Image 1 (spheres, each protein chain N blue to C red):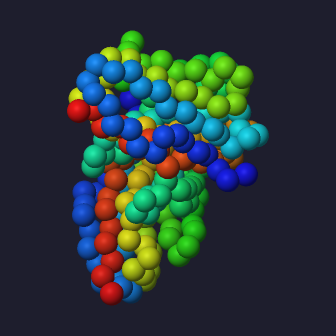
Image 2: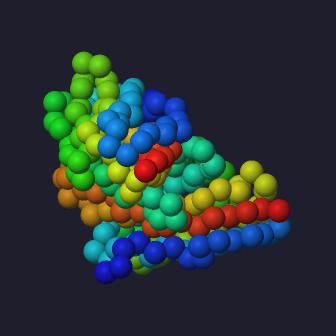
Length: 115
Length: 113
């Protein structure tokens, strides 16, 4: 397995357009997380899934954002009616939930620029 | 709520210098603590972790000790190399396997030859 992969790596979109990002986690991992990172800041938690169930959503995740993990494998994050403030790096991570000794593995991220 | 405060950067050192990057946290219960590193053009990688008080995490010459009394998890390395240039993030996650990570703002480290 080559780790967590995200697609696309870069996305430039016009304000008001919808965008969708994809994350493919490490194959046996049952947890999948989305984070957002703006320039000069640490990643901020958006949402996470255990298998196909979305268990927690941050207040950062406005109603323009929706995430799915339909078969408990890959996940998509959609942003509707993008705004300039949505410009950021969107990171996906996965982990195998097994007691407390787990490690989250991160993808390289999708950099979104809204113009 | 849970939060992490890191030493502000950027930090610039000469090769073979001693490194300390300070990290303090606020959390309820007994969090796990982590240091992640982000090399240029790459994703976040776990550098080291500690899951309970007084544990020491270590990897690649880096060390950090979980200090509950001072709510700190400072990162140290005795002799840095140019290849250590990266952005370092301190993070915590909740107790009982809750793996949502709360990150500090990151510290950019540059090592000059």
